[in-house]
Image 1: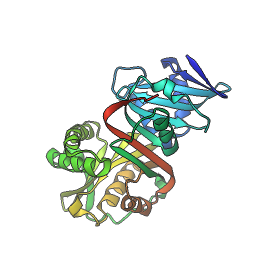
Image 2: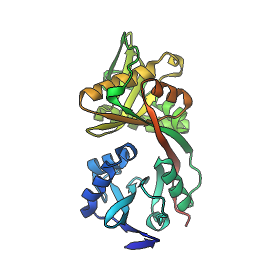
Image 3: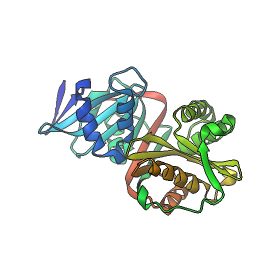
Image 4: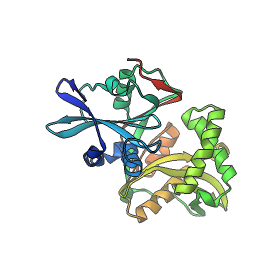
Length: 287
């Protein structure tokens, strides 16, 4: 069913629209990594927690804006216009657990649905790096290995603290999420642990992976090891590994000024702002 929005029309997409949606998303991969990988890996309309449902706005038969939501309730907006969209009508009956994407669309979705602040409400600078222009730090004596090569229990402890520090999770929620996150890292081989003198000192990873681009996430150094450049070295070595496999670009958002400084040091440049709104319990639209 279409809803008139001034000069725009919002339409509930069907699986027949998959190729057109993917084509639109692939023209802006630096801001659409999550919906791209979810659509690629899990498809549309059920069957997996990360399967996607979409609403699209079109002008002259071409998609200009996409509002996506996973079966688990993660809202992933990708808008290219500043015209109003009937977000409330599209999502009023859905449970919302996360809203993530460029700052302006995320703020628009949150306001349109009348949602409260989440456990985490953060706007972060969004960075991009052309991997051929990366500035390698000193990595003498350092190496990276898959997460499976180090004690699982130690990485679970790290990931729990990451959830508390970076995502503002409660210790209880962080502990639960850490186990699932580490098991996925091992199963999907998405993260790397930095070794110094044979000992684990930092971790880095890719939240989304495309043939030409990766989205960095989960960068963490235990508190007692910070200030030594370990996170920077871990990320640079992992990106060099990706570059050797043909990846051309990397994107990420920085949780704090210290992290941003480390990313800028190896060549990342800010291209905008990202926002994440995270809820401990699912929310429904107040419209």
